Length: 326
Image (cartoon, rainbow, N blue to C red; front, top):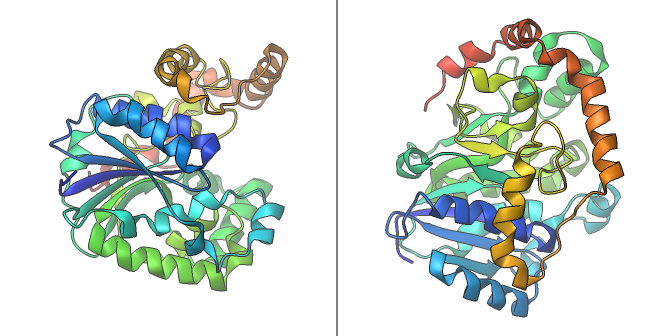
């Protein structure tokens, strides 16, 4: 593995199988001579890593461990209280494990699905000193201007020092240079250690947004098409390349809205890796029905095209897309 670009994932045992599915999805479009693919693991035993590497060798995907020692400064009791997986912080250290030939990083969360060819993002040269990432949907939600949720989001943005209309990116998909990531990840880690309490919502993402200032280039949400965008019917305005299942329930758990059509695709994809015996949560029929009923109750009005259009207009979604760097 000796390409200038590395596509990177960070996973614990529970997210290793989804990460493998996403990574092999990348490889369907991106050949080994175009980019390396690494899955960095936290808390996964060496035997399981070795088994995964055997199966993934035909894809030229490498699984390797991040040593636990790098997390020594993190308050593990706080993470337990807030149900935050340690693996969430792994991306702040992944650059230390990349080969010297790597100059550029494209990071993807494991709960992503590659819908179309991501090569343009692989090939993108993000200017030194900048990180390219798409808006998180809570940035759009706070634009409604009413309700307790809006107030909570704005209070959270204020706590981490975001200026009005600065934007708030989702860290589940980003691109940057390795050199820049070494700087930004270190700043974010220091910020988190000193401000853990106000970073309890998406800890590493909070820290990254707090320190990024004007060093972020906005990606189109086609590169990070999150669950709320699916609910808002935003695919009518952007054609997703990478779908990001960033809310529960995940589509591998059952035929759950709004990604119900993805369940069958996931079942097909995971068969190839059944011999790894990796954990993956599957909901019962009753749990799926309950989840779908809850989604329909909360968002059934968005099934109406006019309502969906109005919501996207109110959050200024299309105009935000027009300002995207790529």
